[in-house]
Structures are given as C-alpha cells and as structure tokens.
Image 1 (cartoon, rainbow, N blue to C red):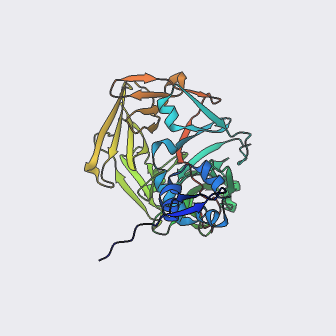
Image 2: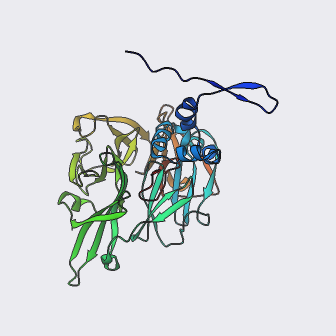
Image 3: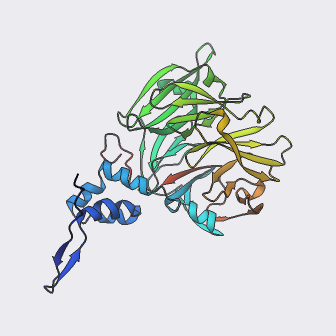
Length: 372
C-alpha cells in the first residue's frame, strides 16, 4: 500500500525577480497555524479570504484547542466582590509578580451587578451567573460575550443555586446546567433543572430533580470531568453526577477514608476528578485523585498540605505545586516537595474568592457557528 506523498514545496518570486522556497500550504495550515497563540492568528485572518475561512472553521478550532492544552496557554479567571479579572497561570506559578487585567470596566462583558458566580470554564469559554438569575457565555481572549436565553419565568420567585458548564462529546455541543429553587404561592419549596444547548440555543427540561441531587445544598458549581458535572452531597460520602449527554443523574463514592470528619470540595487535575479534604484537627489538607473514573478503589492521596486551615484549593500546577487560599494573604502557592509556601503578588487585583482555568482560543460564543 502506497503511503501519502509528502507535501511538495514551491517557490515564489520576489520583487527583485529572484525566487525563494515557500513552505507547502499543508504544512502551514496543518502543522504551523494550529500551534500559534490567539493574538497572531487574529491578525492572520486578514491575509486572505481562504486564511480567514480556515481560521474560523470548526475543524481548525478543534486542532488549535488540542495544541493549546500546554500550560503556557492557560489563564486563570478571578472573581471577586468587585468584578472579574484574569492573569497568566504560568506566570502565577513561576514568577513573584503577575500582571492581571481587570474586566470590571473593560470591553466584552457587563459586570455591573450585585453578585457574580463562576459556573465553569470549558474549551476556552467561561460561563458566569449574575445575581443568581442570568447566565452569560464569555470568551475572555476575544472579549466576546453573550447573554443566554432566559432560564424560566419562575425566577422572580426563586434563584439558580446549583449549576455547571461542560462539553457534550457525544453531540459535539457545549451545555449549561441550571437548577432553579423557587417557592410556590403556598410556601412550598421546589427545585427543577434545565440544560442549555449552545447548538440549539435553547433550554430543555423543567422536571423535578433526582432524589440524589436534592442532597446538594447551597450555592455550588459542578466540576466538569469525563463528560459529567459533579457536586458533593451534603453530609454524605458521595458525589452527585450529571451526564451532559444523557441528562441522567448518578452517584460516585468518595474515598471511604474521608468519612464525615472531613470538610471536602471537588476539583480537577490533568483531566481527573480530585477531592480536597481538610483534616478535622485543621492541621493539614489532603488532595485525593480518582485515577480511573468511576472506580472507588482508584482514589489515591497524591498531595498533603501541612499546617493549613482552609479547604479552598484553586489549582494544582503541572509540577504538583498547589494554588490555595491562605488566611489574610488570600492566595499562596504550596510546594509539597519542600513543604514551602510562597505568596505571589497579582498586580491590579488584590483579592478573589473564585477561580477557573481557561485556554486561550478563538472559540465563538454564538450558537450555530462553524467556529463554536
């Protein structure tokens, strides 16, 4: 069987009449452009109509996303009482000072609101919830944002407390989950859930929630791993899951070692689900990683943070360093190998209480877009 013939180089003629070798278009389009950062790609759209069409295509977006997984292309979105910001995750972990951009009054999103909650980050897009009623899809890299359609007319009697954002691989669709808690006229509390599809630009659902999901109380964002959203049950050693393809709830067991004595939260590291457990004596914190998704026996304790009294772990870096909250310093980076804490300074952004990691991409926030 004959293999694919190698791309043929060609020559172009310069203004002085001389000829110079030129890379084949296959190499440029398939090997070089998908590996470039977003900023030069935005400029290259002006080269020609064919380049603009290529860079805006769905296939190119997927190739660019695959090549953007490297840590240097990751940024961290910061949510505080006064608004939104972002900075380089690579710089935060490796430099004593990190520049940040404050989006409170910047172009791209209106954050003049009383309350901002992070719903999630996926495929370069960030979803936020304003005042527990209004969802916004946002690309911090392109500064494009869009209000999602209204969730429900019952919102005037309640609020969206449980939510999540992720990718439905089966249907190639980005989805937002929302759980509305509202009171009937007789004072009875009800909960109902809906799922927004970017492909159809609509909400579907409006049914009472699964019995397991009712144990997820208070405001909480689902952690997206393996096509599902995850929330921890209140006073239970279990995790509630929601499959973004089948729209079915499920349950995953936490490590039995945790018991009820630990305060825990959930996160993700290198595509795996993690559980953060604060010891009851508040002297150390353990980070457990589920090596094989859905298998209880695959939980493995990978990091212990000593002399720590908070359960908020924001990010685990590629080398095992941990970005976490720490007393009045608000943020610290812990090196478990040396048992050392350092306190990075984020310029122009003094404090934050929620974070999410997104990848710089040209992904569109619009429905039915070839570049979504």
